[in-house]
Length: 122
Image (cartoon, rainbow, N blue to C red):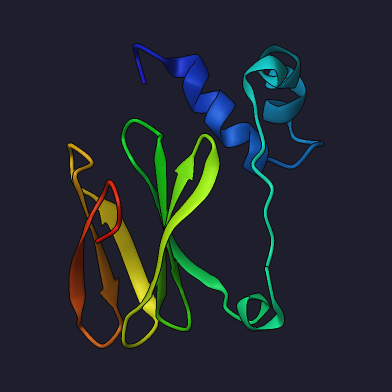
């Protein structure tokens, strides 16, 4: 935080109420650094599957998502492209990338932990 205090505020802005002091103070400075990735359900079955866990790789190149129905997805962030979509038993409670991003793990509420290749999702 000492080396990059302003980044702390920038990362909080998308989640801050627009009438908050934080938002009003920093939004003009941060607007040029913000980007949005839009997506949505591709079919009604996916619409019913709520996201329960999400992790961004340290280099911000990949995003791992876990869903209530046990689905695990790996996405590239630029260009936005889904690498894998796989099913695990039970609701996904956590996803995390390893420090070097080569692996990521998904854990479900039934106690199952799976390790995945962080590059291609195998």
